[in-house]
Image (cartoon, rainbow, N blue to C red; front, side, top):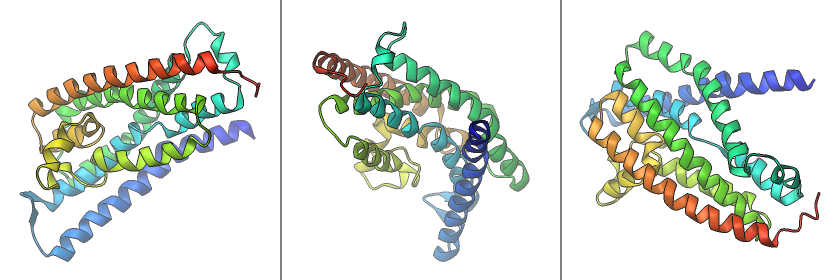
Length: 252
């Protein structure tokens, strides 16, 4: 039963859920253009928005880590973190290696979905730009995991930290550009949102492969994500060290 559960979870996470999510988001954008009765929105046609919704749902699946964030919080809450503290790798590295391995495997399988849709419906996508987009996306995953590490470290000090995961995910849903392209925001919010490192999760890589953005914006995102990684990891390191000093591990 356990083996069956793993296989079923993998099928749902890598194939079924991305397919359903992509279909819903593409239908929503199709309905927007039909309801508005216009051929373009902000200078882009319906096909560009359908392509954005298609790849946006795909990249959004890559840059989420709530499952591992829950596990990290649970380790601290229950006291089972004791067994991890004596291992040769750190708590951060232990879950980071699991996250990256899982994302690589699921990405290879689920990528077939947007590729097939793009080829069938001939949606605007520059496939030659995919390697750079994936490089930015997996670099952004380091920041995502670092934020999850900070949230998990709060469990040393407070109870019911799980609610922060939901609030964080809702905020990222907006600031990554999964909900809609960030360039549709009014100024000055548009400039701020694109300059933040969170836009590297969906908006920048998807905008780059669909032709909305050029390589200069991608390099700016790399710089922004690098700054975010440094700042968030410094905060996480301080919170972790202080938390470990007061940690009792009575739940183990």
